[in-house]
Image (cartoon, rainbow, N blue to C red; front, side, top):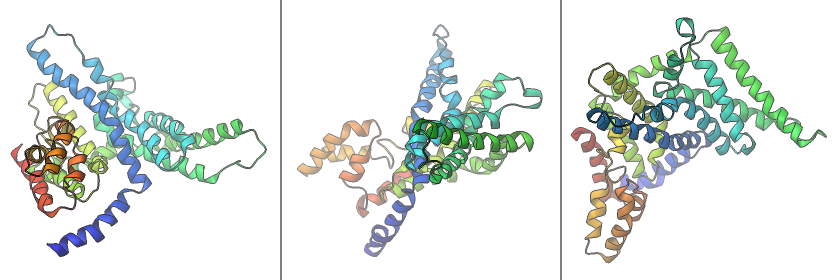
Length: 341
């Protein structure tokens, strides 16, 4: 065990932290963190609609969900461009790259053929089922802006600074739209259907028990090595949101909601992450009655954040991270939780 822990702390964890701290991966993680409030806004309305089913006199709040969670792909596209420019040290492009991503996204998801004038088809493409499309478009636009930013075009010229700024925004923006025009209009590439087709096997497997266990265990394992679980949202969030959208569609069609692997089941309702990733609320409560004065004090200080599933203080303060006695129970919790659900 000692050799294994030494390998984890001296070799594996530093390499993992170095990998996940790279700007592009960090930007994806930052994007996913930024969109969580919009997801939870929609989730609150969906929970409210359960009460409204039994009390029809309650007001209809569906528009709040439609224009928050219902536009999540649009929000992801903007945030991806925004966060990539922030992490790649292009502060002058943080807003412009986000807006360029939104414009390019519309070009890629605009309905065609018999749905060309359908607003509902457009809204469907901008919902949870298209979140991976938003991520890809945001990354594509960010690559173009990043390359252009490194060119430092006209930086040493005698042209006024404001005009240089305009030119260095217009040209990469035009390149993004021109590339989008070639791909999505001239070549008629349906990015939405291509991405959905590629993700379908992964999404289907994730809704099985082994898939659910992996989704919970892998972030928990790395979290005990000090790697934030937020970094996995680029993989798990499209799966969660696709499951939510499938449940919404099923209920709307009068069928039961069958997908359990959703953001609400894993985080919001805390079935799997009660107290935070690795389900540490029980540990926090035990710390509150510990014979150790230090642990008792920390447990009481950390309790309120733990109730709201914020467990970084416990993970790094107890500590659970790199503590072989507590790492193993944390891993077991990440397996038992989804099995129990």
